[in-house]
Length: 390
Image (cartoon, rainbow, N blue to C red; front, side):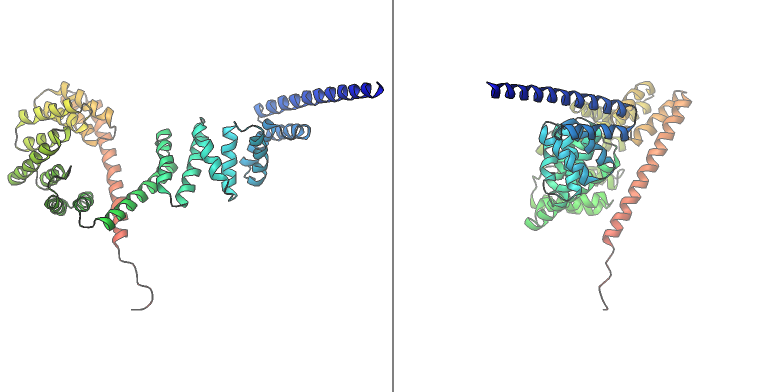
């Protein structure tokens, strides 16, 4: 009987002490959060440490101490606290994401699984971006560009103007493109698709005549290859837009493209351009209209109709189509230029000056980009110096 009384008394003391300890934990946590709100992290850290002294596995205190150590770049200490927090509460996605970043900085193999688990669950934009970039870099260093691309795609959607995201995305996508091109060159160096790729590269370099030659080689191998007849037609027309023979050759390829792929908005736009160069304004207008029926968001058709309406002395209608093109693509320099000329006709000088300024700024920016690409391509083609003496 006496033994039973002692047991009950012990349990009573235990419960009382546990309750007091929990009360102290709650008080310290409350005080710590007050200090955080008052932007006093040092005092908050002392309160969180008091919590861990009473309750070493407390998830909230360890998570906060881990975050503080993380921002001090003390990754070993941060990982120590964050690991305890995640073990106590595995549902803490933000905490696990930070732990994954710490472990990656420390070179620990467990980082990948943590980043993979936490990244899809994150809602906070900044941490989403940081975690995603860490994971993408990890994949990229492993040579898994395809896995890195699967991470970069949502990141570009989250923050399409973020320089770090754009830089990483272009690295990943460039590697994927190069890898697939290399594979195509190895597996099918003499294929029609390889000839098409060469032609497209030449178009990007401004060599339209060379591109046309390789498009013809592709069609000689496979006359039914999708997309090539249209691309050849476009290259032929761009080579000499006002030349009658070039126009006829482009129309011939365009007809073949329609027979293979049906009518498309881009085919209608190309037909409209041919007719415009022949001064057939009404015919050009009808084809641009049909292009918009096929694809209401076709910016080329919108600009084309706007230009023709201005020529037909219908400036107010022209404004509507040109504004549509700019809404779809704010960097459409031709739309801004045409709109500037239309506003001038309407006597809206302030709006005209504004659009002309935008046109000039966009044109200058694009020329700077083109120059950067020219420099990069020139460096790629420069012969490397031989090692040693010849």
